[in-house]
Image 1: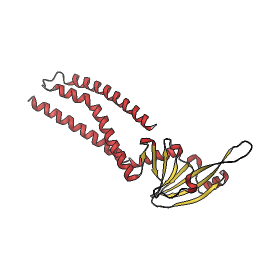
Image 2 (image 1 turned 180 degrees about the horizontal axis):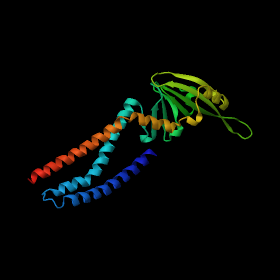
Image 3 (image 1 turned 45 degrees about the vertical axis):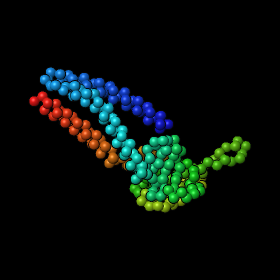
Image 4 (image 1 turned 180 degrees about the vertical axis):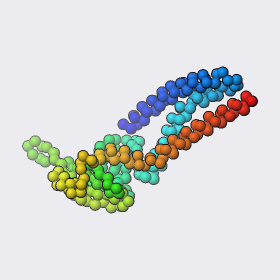
Length: 234
């Protein structure tokens, strides 16, 4: 799914760069056409490729930033249909293809045992993360229906361990424990929300730094080109 999204994004980016490049080159030509410059075509050329340079640099630096953040902070943005965000120093939330299928993982590769269920809700309170996991069990009755049990875990973002608050309880027991800890299902995060929040936190420095580098680089190119053209026509 993510690969298809990236291909569609690349096609849209190419079309946008071409259209913006055509528009900016027309504007640049109308501005400088009456000037007695010998290298006016360089200004028009740079104006035409500036949108493509902006999009390309953003994409390349963004990819480098994603790889760096993935390696240092354990936040994977979904490239290759894999999602990952840390719950603590040792445990993480992960999903393949769809964020809604997230489960709890352990960096020490210990057996998950009862934690192998699907994550349904998360609550982030300062450095604490509460995670409600749903387990599907089959009851062999007349209608062959399935019932659900829940587990509730507590992670400390700066710690390594995991506290099992509830293990394989029904909906009522889970609701009682949530109320006792002032956790409201209406305010809970879905796995998708948690992944998005982790991405924003991980990129809160990388994003503005990336934009600044791209803008400063393009402005420097324009300043150098204008100085070159003016010097050649003196």
